[in-house]
Every structure is written in C-alpha cells, then in structure tokens.
Length: 406
Image (tube, rainbow, N blue to C red):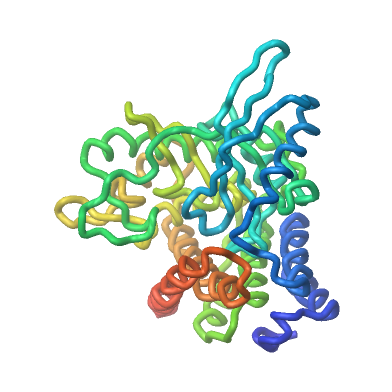
C-alpha cells in the first residue's frame, strides 16, 4: 500500500483489513501500536463524546473506594479544567486516609483520554515515565491509574495537583496560544533558564534500566532503530488521520528516512520539552515538568530541537529570538553541553528541527482537523484554531527542506 491511497471513507470507517495494512506498514513500539489500533477500532463506534461528565463523579468515587479500600472517602468539587488540547483534565478534592488514622483532604487532578485526541498516547506509559522521574526531576505524583478506562469510562490517571505559574502575565497585545511565543521578563529569564537546561540534562542522564518502563521498547544502540520507530509513529498518524494528501508531507517523510542519523546510546526523550510545559513557584523555582505522554527512547537532539523551535520561542526586548522564550539558542546549547556532557551535533540538530515541523504538521494539519471533523472532542473550536498552525508548519517544513537539499 503506497502513501495516500486510502480514501476519506476508509479512514473514517476503517475495515479490519485496512487496519492490518496500516499496522504492517509503519514500524512503531508495541504500546504505540496498541493505542493507534484502538483509536481506529473506536472510529467504528458511535460518537460518544459529550461535555456532560455527570457520570464521572460516581465512577470516580467507586474507583477510589476500590483502589484505597476505604468505604468512607469523599470525592468532591469535580471541575473540568480549561484548555488541555490533547487530554481531558479535571480537578477534585479527595478526603481520605493516606495513612491509618490520618484523614486528609487533597486537591488532585485527572488526566483522561477524550474519545479521540490530537495525540494518541498510552496512559500506563505516561504513568510509568512520571513515576520513573519522581525524585529525579520535579513532576506531579501519580497516585492511581485506570489504563484502559474500564472503571472511569476512558483511560485516565490521577495525580497530585501542584500550584504555580505556567504562563506569566503577557503583554496586552498578545493573543497567542499558551506555550507559543510566550514572553518572560528579564528577571524570569535569569532565574528560570539555567533550571530549564539543568532539568533537561538530568532527564537525558537517567538510567531507565533501573526503572519500571515496561511499556517502552528499547531501540538498539548505534543504529537508526529509534528514529525508524519515531518516524513510523508520526507517518502512521498522518496516514490514519489526514483528510487530504499533501505533497510536502510526502517529500518530508522521504527526506527524513533517507537522512536518518544513527543514535549512539538512546536516552529518555521528553518529547514535548518547551515553554508551556513547565511550572514555577512564586520564588521562581521550577516545581513541575508536564506532558510526558510523548516520551520515548531516542536521540537527545530531538528535545534540543523541539525546545529551540522558532515557533515555540519568543523574543527579548530588542527583538532577538529566544529558545523557549528563555535564552538565545547558542546559550541554550552551550549550557546544555556543560550541564549534560553531551556534545551537540549541529547537523543532527537541523535534522530534528525538520522532524519537529513534520510532527507539528501532523498534529495541526491532520489529527486536530480529523478530531474536529469527527466530532470526538468538546474542544472543536480549539482544534480548528490549532489547525491554522498546520499551514505554518508545512510552509516552514518546505523552506527547510529546500535549504537542506540545495
């Protein structure tokens, strides 16, 4: 099956034969295949997504009673959080006894899969990487998980809710999406930038073999396997989700495969490390790194490229571009080399900049449009707004490919 042969009807109502062809064509990790295949099977079911989550309160209470073994607990003040483009998020107050004889009320959060997401990911995988990072870098504490949604209705995890600031106050004329082109004043940049680098360096140094990461496949060292799996994920997502073909996307994936670099020793890659995915306290300490759902074993240049994309960065007071709105790219890379001991290969960095825009184009030009088109999210307006980034990403992708092949 060659690229783009599937019709809109086949993607919307996929046959078992078509699903098996898709699975055979694109090499991905076992856990990724699991969630992508489940997504396609779910397309055959009636649209169930609704903004009415009245059943969640009862399901949540019963789930927590089973998990804690405590019959007299209370789960109150359940509220949906705004935003959350890829996942449904709620907060609630749990009154229970975390230790015998000690009753507490804790403010917790739920991260739950919608009927279909702009990024299909694995809740147990996210749970495992968060627990692996606990005590290593600042992350929320995962308390419970319903990996298949058998009790809560959709796959979900429950974690501690941390207080802090994700997006500082922006200039009055700023109308950008959260995490894109955010502005940090000089004091914030001075306090946060080194922490931002140090945490990334720490992530890349963690020995995953000492952690429970059973949902992660480990690619071979000194091979292209990590990148084959990574490309397979995003190419599969494009071909499962796009409403129409696009020649730049076909050109891009061919170039990515033909120029795939080897990965010496794969490290844990965050996958979405940037401004908007960390939080800091009033005393300017980063107290949480969020959105680990795209984590995988791969090349550390992937995180470096993503964090230094011009799309995610803002500028300083003189208009100079800043990686993740925090520091010039040359400072970011130099600080990372010092903190990690890893050498930055500029050719690999350029490769992953192109790969980054390919990923953004898949999310914005294909999957977000598909989710809105299929009416499987309450965030239809946000999905349509995000789709506007697709043309930006494809245009930038085409420009970078021209430079890379000239």
